Image (cartoon, rainbow, N blue to C red; front, side, top):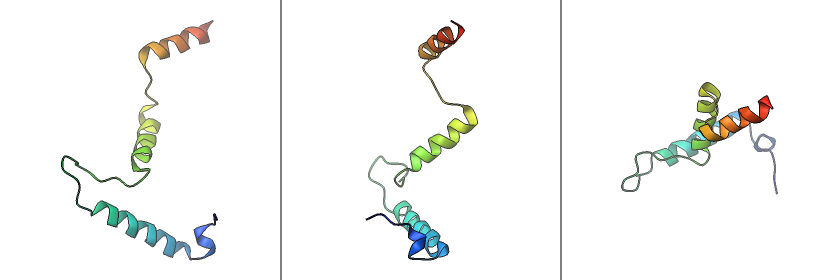
Length: 72
């Protein structure tokens, strides 16, 4: 059953609970050969920020075809 967390708790409580959960995840011992522990969605958040700054990466041949189609 979906619900909005702030309907059962204050926004400060929800923010603190999220931060505590992230801190718990990040403080876990990583597996061998793992350099960083990421919480679910963290890589997507990083990619979104990077794409906003640098643009969305595209294969050059695909992008060239898009340009050809746009130019008619």
